Image (cartoon, rainbow, N blue to C red; front, side, top):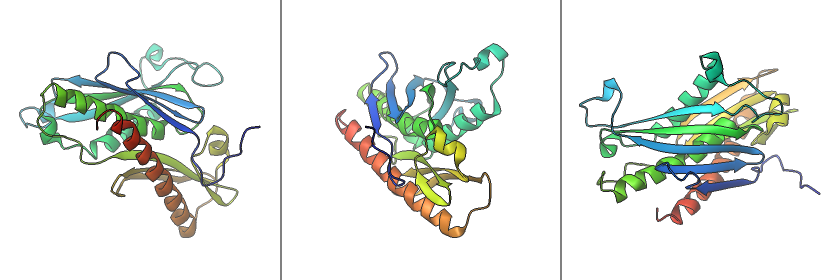
Length: 240
């Protein structure tokens, strides 16, 4: 019999580093039934606005496979443009990861984080940030081992989680079923030091109170601390 998740619990989380054979860094993250493959690719160039600055850049791309959902969706490439949701998510992932990078120490190069959703059951963007950090750290390790950088460019850990209000009660780490019924849907991005990079919250049905906001924030902080501990354990096995 499947155990019912408590309102303050994370879904089962696994982080599988070096899942991709060819990428400089990679991680397959599983959160409940959500699975996202995150890969980090090093490119020896930077965007135009970073040229001759001595600083690097980190950016992200996000996509969902056609059968990552119960019914097939068309590939966005077949339509010739990305959806607004896709653009919003990949910008969020990029902002979250850039928040913990020292671009001077990275040098004038770009690390591209590709997040491909293999299976979606809620929380794909937050899973992409949490798994994307592992891929980013492993790519930085690659650069350090190759002596392409001399100093570690990551200033902190970063992870993300969803919270919400369901029937008046705050809940941590929503799957798709809970998310679709939530009165409030919120995503939190937080560093290992406990500082926030982003808080995205929307009342789907009715406005939420300051008390509910405080409770959601506390639940999110608790969940992110647990995720960062998992990140630390995984990276420790890789010498980081």
